[in-house]
Amino acid sequence: ASKRLEGKTIVITGASSGIGRSTAFEFARTAPQNLKLVLTARRVDALRQIAADITKEVGDGVKVLPVQLDVSNPEAVRGFVSGLPEEFRDIDVLVNNAGLVKGVAQAPNIAEEDMDVMFQTNVTGVINMTQAVLAIFKQRPEGGAGDIINVGSIAGRDPYAGGSIYCATKAAVRSFSESLRKELIATRIRVIEIDPGQVETEFSVVRFYGDKSKADAVYAGCEPLTPDDIAEVIVFAASRRQNVVIADTLIFPSHQA
Ligand code: NDP
Image (cartoon, rainbow, N blue to C red):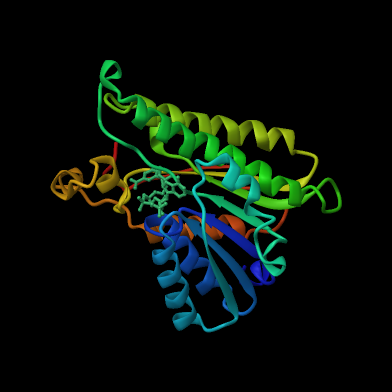
């Protein structure tokens, strides 16, 4: 499987923590010989540290490029590919992982700012990044080739009270993945949707505006997944034979209903 990743250029959004960070390490560990990783997020210092840690662990067979990118900014996304050094521009895999939930609120009380940030990051960000990378994929023979891997959520399938906007954004991601997969059916471009259940990351700290005690309470009495559990599935999907598409996968801890 690692041979299938060799020579590839992988872009990961939201690579500064949690699932995105683990996915970067998992790709590097799986194909340590000849791989290029473009790690993106807003916290570029964290990306630089991760890049250094990956190189320390696997050596310089993996070229890692940290790039500051806010996926909710359409102009930044438009300039992203052309702004890459040439050796990183021939992208093969995009992992649309950046995403967040802000607040827990019944519909009448949802803050407009929170709603905007969730839609602009989780939905518009995914669509804009996909369009940017599809332009490269489409230049390849047979209608194009490459992988789009979208990180959705159980929330997009099983909405919960107090999370209507987040759930709606993740339902939108899933729907987008499915339409796109059908649009690209005649090509060698794969669209892969991975929907995690509960995973212990910075996700809940962000949800509660940085309140660590509220974030920790979410995981009290349960055993969430680790970000590595999701990273392994993402890399597994990307390293299947070309004709195999892991189109739609739900992964949650065994206790989660
Ligand atoms: P983290 O909060 O640890 O990671 C989220 C990542 O997204 C960070 O690297 C953050 O980086 C990045 N990000 C947020 N906003 C932007 C933006 N505007 N532009 C670029 N990057 C951004 O949480 P997870 O690892 O858990 O989240 C990853 C994905 O998994 C998300 O899409 C989330 O919805 C999904 N998910 C998580 C679950 C969980 O239980 N943890 C369950 C189901 C799905 P930075 O702040 O540096 O920009």
